[in-house]
Image 1 (cartoon, rainbow, N blue to C red):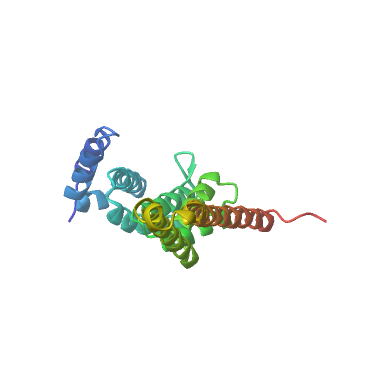
Image 2: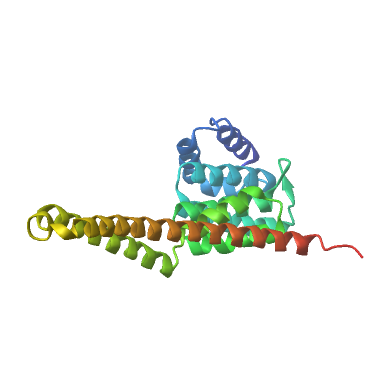
Length: 225
């Protein structure tokens, strides 16, 4: 469909007049006039599509946001666009795409994309923070075993305490001290299983993130001889 220059100008002006914080208004306008927006000059089309894509992210419509990120990344690569509005557009799109995967709880895809971002931009501290969070969300099998051990020790402690209160004083008073020691030990083991498991997982994620960033920096800036 052909749109006259005056119509295209009016369309672009109307779109840009929407409040930047009115994310749902931006989304509605773009989707109602998408064919017309595609007829705009490239820079105007890119401007509108970037605003729409960011509005999708802010409105938490992460599924659509991922689709638009892929479209924009393709445009950026094909048109060799490095910066837009004073920002590295490729970096910005990759970061928002990774954040959408994170919010959708697709942690494996978020991890792969964040690692790619860090390889290209090793000084991106926010990407490192998100990588650490993503790794924390991906629980290893041994952590579930540690949690199961915590629950097991806690249940045994409850049983021992019940026996200590209801049975031992009446039938085996000589065992009272042993039972008290046993229930304290079981509670300690339960807390230890939980603490060691969670602390170990957190430390492992921190170590992995730190060394990945360090290796990326070394590859990006090799030592000069």
